[in-house]
Image 1 (cartoon, protein in one colour):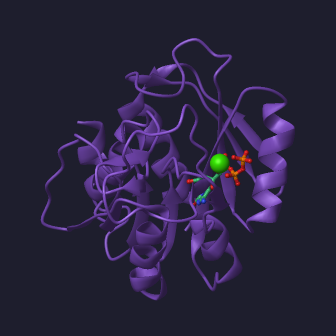
Image 2 (tube, rainbow, N blue to C red):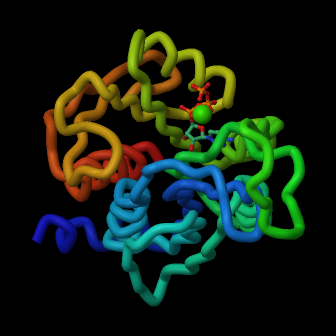
Length: 222
Ligand code: CTP
Ligand code: CA
């Protein structure tokens, strides 16, 4: 019902959304990943679609289901894949919401064959991954950019730092301190911080309702 009312608010606009975890290969059968479910980003994509936008959803490994005629879904595994997929559409979008839980590091080398068990200890050297949202911020033209920050302490301060460093228009801060917020669950509690330092606190809600609040904010800004 609510979505019906806003059905045309973003008609003619196109957004890129990143969602889910990334998997960084160690060998052909193993990876480094995280517990992101992809729910928050998929809910964002649904809210954008319901307001009439076209969406490029760049989705890491996730069980979420989403189908829509205005959806261009690109399934990716690693952070490097995710960056390439974002780069392929970035010039065509009016904005982006970066909800993916991108692995900060990946194994320096990927073994061509399954690693065999030998010594009592094994060290895997990690190297830094590209910052997908950081790249988008550095290459921003007219795009309206929204990032996420999941913090365990000094959330507002860390969020402000990321907003500035990544050249964002707004950042969604959620803290693991809030019961019901964050990974895996169906609810989230967010603070939306704008680049002019305005901030909005929202109640604990379903991820679909949180997504609606975020997309509604974006629609009012465009
Ligand atoms: N992000 C990204 N690519 C990365 C790392 C992060 O696109 N390699 C995006 C996330 O999708 C999120 C925002 O950047 O929208 C902030 O992610 P976060 O992990 O909180 O920040 P980092 O810059 O990685 O800093 P740190 O993990 O040290 O707090
Ligand atoms: Ca990180």
